[in-house]
Length: 348
Image (cartoon, rainbow, N blue to C red):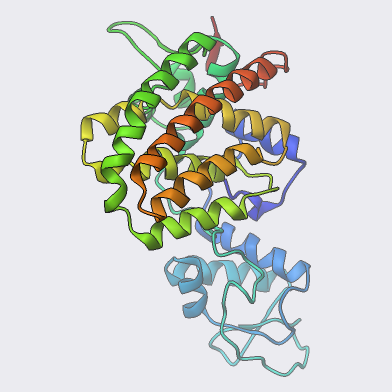
């Protein structure tokens, strides 16, 4: 979650905010405030040249919004004294009445010191934000025990309707994160070693065969990009979204060209192994395991060599080794303090 726009606390605070849902934008928060925070951060760090001309159009394109929120953000920054009006059609990075030479250059991410992957303004609907945040909460809870989800309490927590919460929970049920029998409550967890072993058995029987079938339908360019991402991840501390991308590239996107929709539905519902890995790394804040990256890399390398049999064999070997690592991580997580969860999560 790219919530650094409004400033960052400690890593522990960030993790706790994710679990509690407090880093999700309030319903009343607006795009102009996110834009203001990004620009303010840049100005405070002297990240752009004095005299830089700021025009609504290029900034709107940069942030992926209309001009209206950009205009309001610039007006607020002007009122706060960070920028001055310029020739009646924009602003300039200077104080009022300060004489500076105008700097007219392209307003790019590189100029503002922003990464290409950074989402500058969160344009998602309330439902999408709730879905993502609930997924993180349920993933964490199920590792530490059995919890009941209070629908009404969740609706109050997110300041939204029960219909939005129910829809999110139904979508997360399709991922195997929560379950509900007719006329019963929503429940998640506990995630046990037996359940993990069952999930890995399913994957070990399905994924190698699917990879053999999908192999010749995967583009060389795409495979090289995936392999490059694996190499770039070495020695790095990945966030949950980056870990999810790494895992889904190999275990979902590589297999989709096989064309078996029912199989893909089953695999998407067997997310427990990846959940343990994401929670483990997010709580311990350590670099991703090099053995896992080596195994991912081997699969991609044999796919690039068009050797489907060896690629499938490496996939099976990876899943067998990953099962051992995941069970060890589950044991580690079992002795860690339970993160504070929102009040709508009731331990059973």
